[in-house]
Amino acid sequence: MNFVEYAVENYDRLLELSLDHLAVVLVGLLIGGVIGIALGITVYQRPHLRNAVLNVCGVILTVPSLAMYALLLSLLGTIGAMPVIVALVLYSLLPIVRNTVTGLSGVDAAIVESAKGVGMGRWRRLLSIEFPLAWPVVLVGVRVSAVLLVGVAALGTIIGGPGLGELIFAGLRVITSPNAVNLALLGTLGVVVIGMLLDAAFLLLSRLTTSKGVR
Amino acid sequence: MTDMIALEQLTKNYPGQARPAVDKLDLTIPEGEIVILVGPSGCGKTTTLKMINRIIEPSSGIIRLQGEDVTRADPDELRRRIGYVIQQVGLFPHQTIGRNIAAVPRLLGWSRQRIADRLDELLHLVGMDPATYLGRYPKELSGGQRQRIGVARALAADPPVMLMDEPFGALDPISRERLQNEFLRLQGQIGKTIVFVTHDIDEAIKMGDRIAILREGSTVAQYDTPETVLAAPADDFVKEFIGSGASLKGLGLARVREVSLADWPTSQISAGREAARRALDSSDHGWVLLLDEQRRPVRWVEARALQGEGSLDRVGLEVRAIVEPTATLVGALESMLGSRVGVVVVVDGSGAFLGTIDMRVIMSAVEVMRAAAHKRVLDDRRRVRAGQEPPANAIAAQ
Ligand SMILES: Nc1ncnc2c1ncn2[C@@H]1O[C@H](COP(=O)(O)OP(=O)(O)OP(=O)(O)O)[C@@H](O)[C@H]1O
Ligand SMILES: [Mg+2]
Image 1 (cartoon, each protein chain N blue to C red):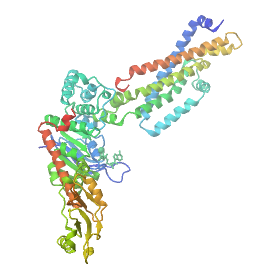
Image 2 (cartoon, each protein chain N blue to C red; image 1 turned 135 degrees about the vertical axis):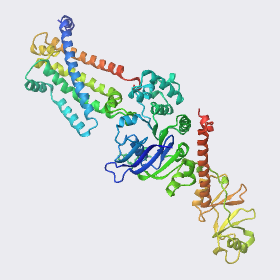
Image 3 (cartoon, each protein chain N blue to C red; image 1 turned 90 degrees about the vertical axis):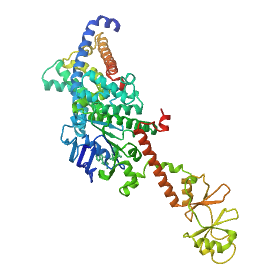
């Protein structure tokens, strides 16, 4: 059976696993996004804290994903989607925090001063002026994380996580069978396509959510 | 007339700075007037201004607004009562012009309809068409239009007080002049209490009902009407600062024929030594200028060289620093600095002696020019305030 025939035959399973994969990535990204943006907002005006947080997030990103999964498995004592999502959240932090800090620090000081000058309080200023202006940069961070997480999630299968990793690992297990390559290829292709789709989706989101005045 | 703003012993110490940026400043701003804070760079104008709306928190002292001590009031509520315009304008780039101007009314919870009506009114006030501009974004406006919107935003909730930090400083000279005139006319209608910072004395004279000339530490050197500051500067610092205006840029363009020349003892070579000695003796100069038969300058001679007998053709120094009436004053000044005698000889088209220019002539020319320039600015301001036509160059720019 060649690859195309194999893909058509396993279409249902491919779709199901892809949706699972996408779901786990989006959940991780959503939580990571909220935490990362909140962290960025907390530290962007505090140089010491900012450097500390960015360093920690940077270190997290250097941990190999297999080691991360092993660690979380023993720490959380459970398998399945949960530890995978925790790993995804941790990996997503650096790009999101860094871009949130960069975006917020990059807002023109005169604009911030004007916002103060018209009598906007700290939070109002952040929500209606600073954050919207930083938003395109923040979103780039989220987009980078999204693509990163699609790959990391594929390895989540080793601790029972959902998604396309299942095909890849199934291929590994039956490495001598004629379908091994097809399985692995199908899983890998799915991961790549999801990555590309997410990337495009975030580009579009950025277009749609950025004010005409700053485009 | 009551005081709208009173600053009492207002002081700002920046951390790590040996001397206070603002040092125990006492200043009162009368209601309905434009008060200009003017002074050299770094003297503390901006710091003073920003303490009034507490963008910068004072280290000590008291700020009163309409008699009320606002030094510890809620800064956000305070700022909604004070319009604020800065040089960089600081419009919110992601919001439309309408939304920008509506910032304070929205914070104050005005109704939709009231805001819409006010937006129309404000755009007319700053001379822009609401239908065209309300939906635009800041980047779609020119620099001058942006600053007009900055002013409209500051005026939105009709605050009694406006603070303006070099509001026209970033504009080209023509736009600046236009906006100054527009703003003076606008102030004629709205009668706000305005504190206006500039480092340009000409702008201060033109825009101010009163001028506070500040020296380092925001110390008041003089606080008076522009007329009084010009007519009776309080001290040398003020005098020097008044002289710093762009009005003196005209020196490079002024011609020798526009100044009154100094006289100088002269004598004809052919008249001999005795005549030259007499000419020198009857003046208090150390040199006599010798002329030839056509009254053309030939030699500079000191008393010592006139002793003895003989022809005068070779005594003294050759006259090198010679200019014609069409030369610029700056050119004359340069020749003067290269001359041993310290004097430039002015000759007519045929080379005949007309007079001389020395340092005193230049200094009094500068004085005359300065006075004329200040008179121009004052006239200009009177004209604009009386609602008459703006000066010709502003019309040409329309
Ligand atoms: N944030 C700051 N930290 C420390 N020193 C400051 C700060 N801001 C201003 N200064 C100092 O305080 C003094 C007054 O500054 P300020 O900005 O009020 O001057 P200014 O009169 O507005 O000058 P300019 O005409 O250049 O705008 C200066 O010596 C300046 O270096
Ligand atoms: Mg300043």
